Length: 241
Image (cartoon, rainbow, N blue to C red; front, side, top):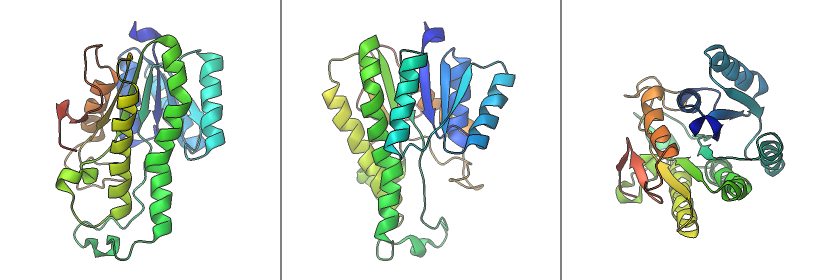
């Protein structure tokens, strides 16, 4: 059954997205790896293909409405289905000096930077959900995973990095909204925090590998029919919003 499933992973050229694409392909899914840069996503897909995985590269900027529409059209044309959507593409544009975060204060952040961050981290997932859920509905099954962060938790909200924190809180709200509207359907959506991972965004001091972070995302992507929807998870366990 999994061999017939089509999974879309955004931000798949490196880091957590690449690890998720690898794990889903290893589980038997046909994975469409979406990336903004042609060379990077094609090289990443070639690497996985050379390892025997079924993956296809697709170049798209997910913040561009026409690019998202073109992706949906390709999926309908070539596969006539989408089963799994991993909204992994994201940005952290504020200064990343965790030892001295004052440069990423709510009092100095450029509102235009907040808008740019929102566009990628919250609005792009909304566009993708709008574009791909119709295909899931037609095939009667679907799993959506919004890759979020503990930095977006209202229950434990810290200071600094307001653009990133606010965008991830908005992404979590999108998860809850979508789950409510999909209630009773065979399509499930959840937010997953992969933890602090050693990626280009997370930096070298992070405590987890990209492969570690990918595990919880893949778990949510392959949930059984009696699995949860509308939740926030890390390593398969619920965490506070």
